Image (cartoon, rainbow, N blue to C red; front, side, top):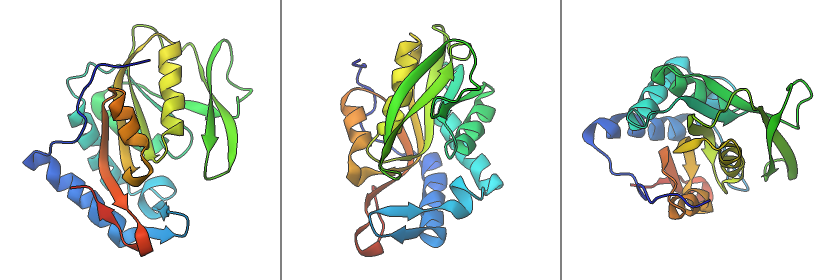
Length: 209
């Protein structure tokens, strides 16, 4: 599905720069870069959670989409849950997460999408009960990382299947050099990333300005 063109690139206001730069500094100070363009930020984002900092990220994400009329925030288990919860809490709307591997404890009719994981080198199904995404919903999809865009495309597929409206995508960290975010922007999807890394060569992080 094509979407109307909205915001191809971030335009930073003074209020935005402060939390964005704080995230970049946290990535540099606490993150670890491994071969294969793997960035580990488990100390604060997706295993151990820095709750106060996550709340600030949620505030920024909610501010970016405060006028979009969002009624649900949708993510995929498990690493996306923390940032999605933080954003949903600030927007005062429910957070829904897609379960992986076609979980048997998701009852009734479901929406399903197949997602290829480069990390695990395999394809898995993500599912959401039709009880939780309705045609009158305005959905913000949210995740901790965006690289090739496979997980995000799976979530967008679920929103489309539900005939709901896609408000856009909120990402904590985007690996800009892997192109997934820019491909989505070219389709007219609003993608807002709190930090965009354009290069990780030789363990040196270069952020998009």
